[in-house]
Length: 465
Image (cartoon, rainbow, N blue to C red; front, side, top):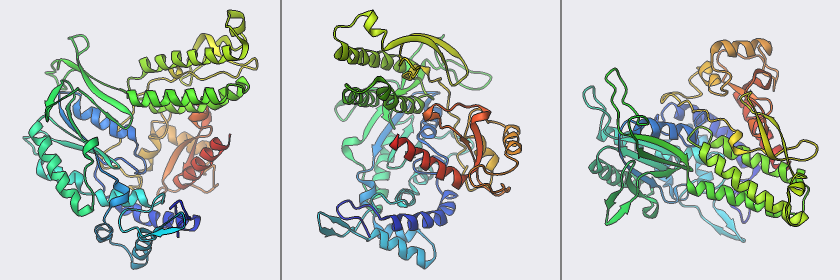
């Protein structure tokens, strides 16, 4: 059943979907391709971006940047169910969820295609339907001992990029993928499909395409560079390649973030300073953390200046024409201790008399993301590897052993002992989005399912705060 007018599964259906997902996911995680990253446990947008960087940073490449049109709404049910080999009771549930229909303003509509809107199991079903796209390209251009990889496909949910040094190969891949998607009931969205080059402008279909492309909120582009800034090839006989690969927050993402900040400041124009700071801090921290693994320092500084100007206007609207004396009621000086343990002195911090201050983007340290192993899955039993990925301060088996000893071998959430077969997560007791730090006193080991429960609770508390 679905909620009337919304089309979202009920609590009972979502609970049942979560159970079915937990039964199906381990098998399919072992079958998914190594360059598929969206809606998979242990993988993130940062892994997809890191893989793109590794694929292009040693040369100039052509890129097919594409999006699948209405992926979750148009998946062919028969095709999807034919790929899933599971007990008949589970398949019956899957079919019922797919065919459940939607009540819209009291009018019932059948769902002949697509996955359940808002369903817990929908992302897994979408990944199952799209399984095979990467292997299609790998089959067309196989990697051999003597031939380097001619093409790489990296997919995040319904967004994907195809990377190759050859424009002809890119065009062949676009055609092959379009044909492959037809039995799935899907097609590439023309208006969101673009072929470009990472380093130079190209003319394609009578249009000049600027270098670089946007993907998952990041702008990926290469810039010509002299010998002092140029990247180099690997190996003993390394050589300069004449350019540098930079990944930055996209202009669209920066503009959207600025608009959110602007809207909050306008909404809180008559609120106490402490209320405005408490509202802005999680927004700024979350955005800065998302972009903290790429070349973001310049963007962070610009954003902080823009926000300073907005807040200065906010103070003027409250106390009239600004002067240093009036501004000092809202902007103060002080020493801030950063999450990496360093301290910095700031002269114009937006801060209350009680010491509550606004977090600034450029306080977030830039830390490169460690790319996940292509074949790794949380269900492979290698809990040491997965635990080390969860916190930068915990990066060795010895460190994990110290946490296990500190907790006396028990999960701090459920109190049960860990076993060698358990999936273990390194968790921040106080989430980093709320100012928690990467240090031992703020870290704990949890069972994976306990970590999911705690994360959901933290997010709920954040929404109500």
